Image 1 (cartoon, helix red, strand yellow):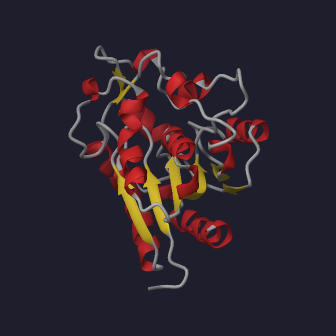
Image 2 (tube, rainbow, N blue to C red):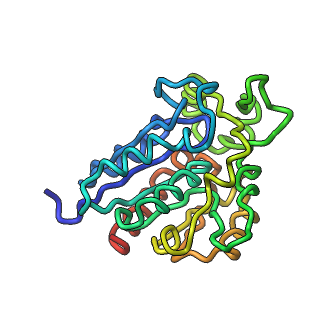
Length: 250
């Protein structure tokens, strides 16, 4: 057993799956860490279809089940990419004592102030884009949009991989805000760090920095020349920051 071994749980963003972490899994495991990836509902190879996901709580339930199943004494480093940060936030709310630190990668930060709205997080990550809405209440970014706004700096082979594996995501129902509320007493007690991607065209640098200013975090890093899919465009830089976090917060 490696002395500095940590358990990372990596959560993907909208339309993606556990597959998008393959580079980080390799880097982290080669350094002696334990890594768990999972598919959220109707994502990756998860058996549910998008029209079976009735709410955002249904969507993040696989993560809740996973964290619940961990030994009581185990503490993880929880990583959420993009819309996956909404899901990791709920795991923080339900199981704050099981999470040493939560890492938000190009992701939303939910407000803890009473009366604040979290619907902006839903809008920011493309869940309400009417021009892309499908008739069954789901969306999937068109390939040309994904290439120009999510993958513009990523290797072309990773974009090709994505085109074979991405799946539609639900637009969710009117319970979204109710089912993504977090509190200072739970979510607010877990250390939070952010990774901001300087060339991100979806969660833009400006919007990310504004969220950090409104919702202070323990630390953040800006990765230059990184697009939204930083795990593809700058995997080594992301891995290096994960190593720093493991040493500092675990």
